[in-house]
Every structure is written in structure tokens, then in C-alpha cells.
Length: 85
Image (cartoon, rainbow, N blue to C red):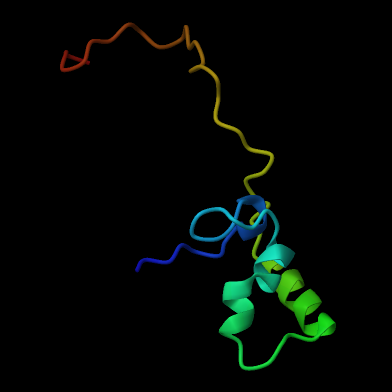
């Protein structure tokens, strides 16, 4: 099974194999994860884990959006693909 990266995991709900968890705290409390844990997470451990996952969010490209159209550059001559330049 190929697992996805955890980068930006906070920004990509829903969670789980079939989207059964709407939030990350829901994932920590679902039956599958609680059944496969040797002991339950303490509330402090759960909040630390959620803080760690939030720290994996990449905000460097949040303000950069792709342009809606290419800019018009009148200073460049008309060129053909494969033509002489």
C-alpha cells in the first residue's frame, strides 16, 4: 500500500480510507485507530500530535496562485514554433 505524505495533512480533509473522518481529531478517536493502539492517547499526547501535524503545513506557496492567463508581452516579436529566430 502506498501511503501519502503528511505534508499539508491539515488542509486535506476528509481523512481515512473512505473519507469517514471529517477532522484529524476524529481520526485519532475512530475505532480502527483505537483498536490498534497498545494504550489510549492521553489528551496532552493527542494535542501534541495534532500540533505536530499542523506544523507540517507548507505556507510558503499559500499566497502564490497560478496566473489566470499568460501575460501579453508586446516587446517580443511574433515567433513560430520551429521557425528561425
